[in-house]
Image 1 (cartoon, one colour):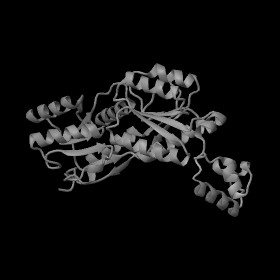
Image 2 (cartoon, rainbow, N blue to C red):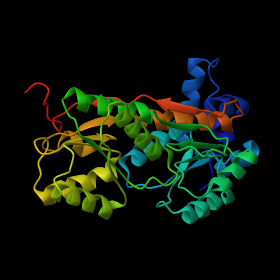
Image 3 (cartoon, rainbow, N blue to C red):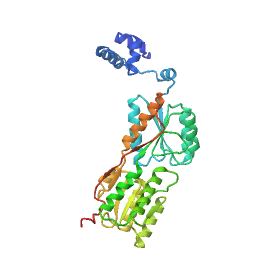
Image 4 (cartoon, helix red, strand yellow):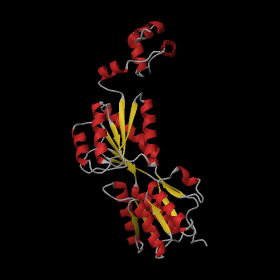
Length: 334
């Protein structure tokens, strides 16, 4: 079958090729409604498919962006991907999604692959260990935006939660409910900014309130073992702030194995609201980060950079929301 061209659309719609080009590129604000309707009908009736290769050669764009996430198992990561993909679709862009599995070597390979494919820019939730690589991308002027991470030497816009406020909200809620012993559960800190920021705020709040710290930090098997030891020694605090969804899974497994119930034995607040938290029995109190808004604004920034707009290199913080459910025992009103 003969390939339908823009000239065919122009003839069917009784307009010039330039007018069709303006329509296809979204530049039709000053175009009459009748003209737009004729072009739209012609595109539909002829099943016209724009020549993406020709357009990319002309515009020097591939109409594709990359997304690299450190760990796709995080519910936060999947929400970020969805938000960026939705925004990219509005911009008539395609998306290539890569999961680094917290492996800097895998992440480096993905960056090389995406650059070889000449994607127009990338949104990254970086692993640790590739600071030099990202500094180089910034120096090359390659459109790059971070989500949920900061790399000190890489001048790249970053979009992330206000982590200090998130921990403060959780800590304050537990204190209001009469809890005098509050623990903190996290995956290994490494060089990952959100984990460090959340733990630092927890420590500051404990010092401010003259409270002992209970830090349960490590890989999944370490978290479960540490909770078990504290329970055996009768030192497990009555409330835990859990720093993310994967850490929460380990806490819930440990409580089940130990026969401990929420909220009577242990009160739980998780940072990062996840799908099952609302339907768990009891429903789990959470400090939710607006993942969809974070992803959308990161995408907006990336497309601005791709299109040559000035975007200051800064950290954009998003306000968390405390969602009160049933996993915190209220000692204050007993």
